[in-house]
Length: 204
Image: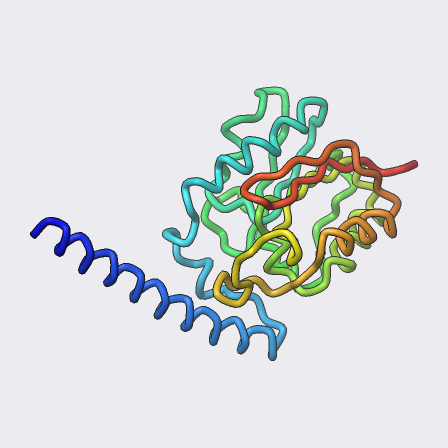
């Protein structure tokens, strides 16, 4: 009897997951057709998964020498909790969850002056950005010395991009070419659940 109940439950969960994935795929298609960000999705706090903090923690290890840090897609600001007291932290996101959060839609030109910052962090956010050239152009123009980013490369992560709501499809080589194009060099490379994590330095 217990096995039957478990089988029915698991089948229900899988069925519900498929429905949610189909809905997200349809929504992603609509967003891409209009080149919009998914503001409605990110207004929901439950869209911020607890295990994403593991990825952010890995990325924080590259920031020990940085003093003025801005994080894009800051979400619940987990990064702030693992930084040192001497490190200044500015959160930026599509949604203003905290008073200190600066609203920024990375699918529009970045209007924030980045010159005061010596590091910019992008943890699990660039998949939702259509044109990463515009982001890196701003980083280069404002001479941000360090960039720490993660990206689920389309040739490395075996997941449906549309079902995850991902709006861009860069390969690992595409990301490396992008980094080189804007005069950054890769100091460190790690992976988290097949996602690529880069620690970059501006090549002055």
